[in-house]
Image (cartoon, rainbow over all chains, first blue to last red; front, side, top):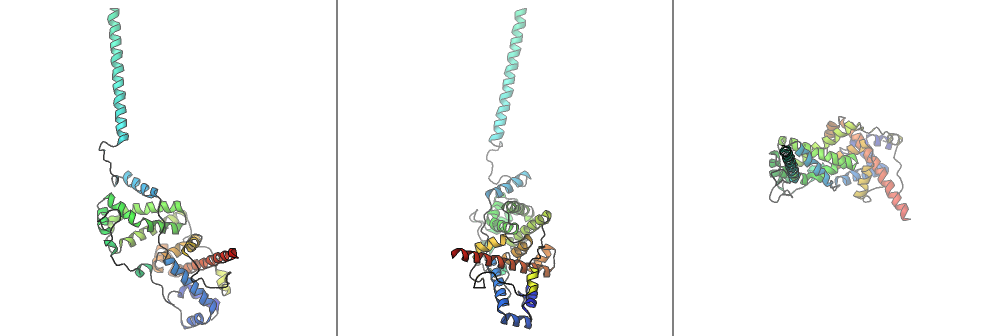
Length: 121
Length: 218
């Protein structure tokens, strides 16, 4: 068996083992045995690669936001303000303030108009 | 030739993975976190994320070679986990189930991108048909004992996508060829052939790297 013939079948026998002729070639051919040794070494080292990479915290933020947007979960951090948070409170206060101001302006306008009518009479 | 063990069966764990404590919640086991996550408990789901994020992210990163894509795919994998956790019946380890889910997410993404899952790179073939490969560089022809995992990681990252996927699935993550063939929609023979090409390419890259290092020292 030539090295070319051996290396052609190598992908299919490297894990399961070859026939007698293939095993004999492997035993006697330094080039092919070095090749097999290297390939097995690479495979063994690959198995030892531990998952070392840590995802950026934005990954979790994205997950959390998606789940909240879908209404699947409430915020995992929890929102203690049942009113809905500082932003909503600010909006509420602003609206009340605008309404109050409008009421004052309207009242002032009414008072001014009333005084003017009485003065004319 | 001794058949290398599948990675998962080669592990020896003294404590059942389901019983190990979920780091984020003292006193809560993974099994308890899974049951709570099934019920929609966001805190339990976050705990499961903390427990498995590294493995899922590393898988995505190794298969895509791209940080941004890996982050997006990790996010998608965990979102799918949350939507499908109720279907987990405990027939396999949770980590195995999640891992398979993540692999499918990555493969679907790659299919959408139109990347060849099986490499079209035929550059290796002529060398194999011509006879013994010519070794590059060093006096010592074998790699054994000469590569570190950082270099191996870098070499894996520089593989063509099709080679990288098969190599990561088989040699790094421990999937068998019949499983890879089913996932990738190819034959077992094709899976073996692509894996071999990937390993041959890595061998060349690592020998080149070793030769360059030796040349820099002199």
